[in-house]
Length: 446
Image (cartoon, rainbow, N blue to C red; front, side, top):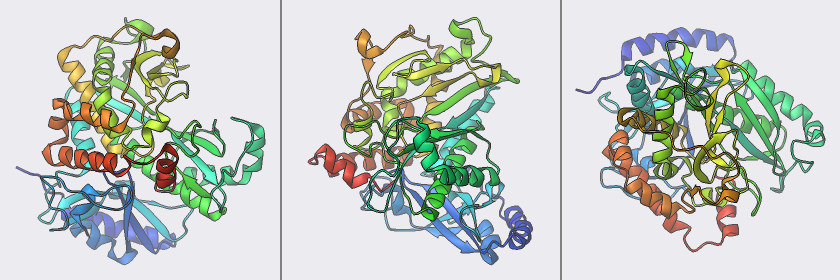
């Protein structure tokens, strides 16, 4: 029997929040969700309507389950398309005033049917379900998603051309980066690192790890904030996998650690580099499913212009200690709490809720089957020549996804079919494009 959300309690929580938000000068609240094409969609309400929205939700057409990156639509067998309505219900536990958009607050939204039951196509609901399955095993997960982006001028050219990781680039945009740092901090986020990255105009920020759903929420908030700060500085932002043809692109690496009763299972265990048995099996499960998971974590045609060897993208299905060319980079960290696994093959066109949910589902399957972790790849897999390449195109990832009984079951039929329909339609949409045309088509969509 489906569980309905507690409408009365949410409305009371919203009314309590309204007074504080009003005192802070907030006039409206933005509700955000991410569709299957990886685009962040929003609706907003005046502050006076927050309690009503928390109780009854805000209308949202279900056809966005099958929206493509260019705002066209496809169809899926179990999707109703433009018929019917859903309700966006804000999660007020994540309600926060937006530091770079005075007068506005933000909250992630869950999607429900009109009768108050969870929408089976809700990606955030999927991530929550799998997180709860992990917790029923007596385990917990801490996750964090790195954010890489390119800043450009009004003409669309990279606005920072200094050396990779260079002080020149940092000084040129010192005020901009300080405002990014301040905005994120004022919104209650713990920033770990903020620095210039490799490609022209590229920067990266990392925030503290948290629960899987919370990490996906934070990813949305960080991207939203960076875009708003950039606009205030006259800069454009791109999270696209590749900004310039042939260059290193924007990744969205996910860090993950598995815990039991306060102990990090990536540290102090009997396995290689201190891994505990459960951590080994969990990571083995993710590695086994990684080709299919790319349909979630590298979802666009342009994703595979980034996911190539020798660009720090993790193009090989292998793992290794601090191996930045492996899809799974094991990090021991300077303390027990910092040990984690980094999945490098995902990018920012992905819906973060699909990524964390899919990775957790694959990890649980590894635990259930006692899957052994394959031998470590100790050096550059491109040089060794023995490691398996991950899918090199979206159609290859789609093929792996269609063969994955695990993801079909974990996602549920409606969400699984909607994701498949979007991937197939986008593969067809860009099938005749040159690489340069594909990059140009999606450069400003994310």
